[in-house]
Amino acid sequence: MAVLLKQMMIGTVTNATATGTTTAGKVWMVKNIRLVNTHASTPAILKVTAGPSGTPRLVSPQNMSLGPGQMYQDDGEFILNSGEVINIVASPAGVAVEYLVSGIERDQS
Image 1 (spheres, rainbow, N blue to C red):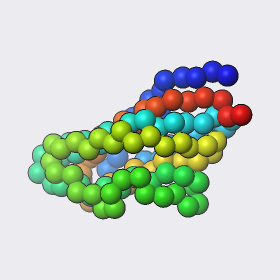
Image 2: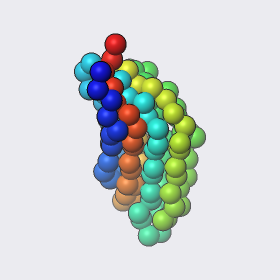
Image 3: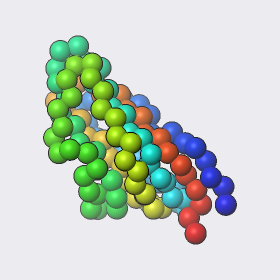
């Protein structure tokens, strides 16, 4: 049963949703979520959801406001089973938010 330290999601989202999906036959233990508003003057409105793709639940404050240059970090742990998703939703248009989601991946059994 392999256990991997992993960057589950890394990238930039702009007025959209970034989605990460657990690999078939694997389980993710999400250990850290980092979000950084890289825009110079506009606040970002964010939310993070996780769980089954049809009914994900909030894992961050609803409509969280992140000022220019600010970072949000969540060290709360949660589990995503095979096929479940984590969504990072950012708005308004023109605001770029960098994200990094890291944790542990292991075989589901």
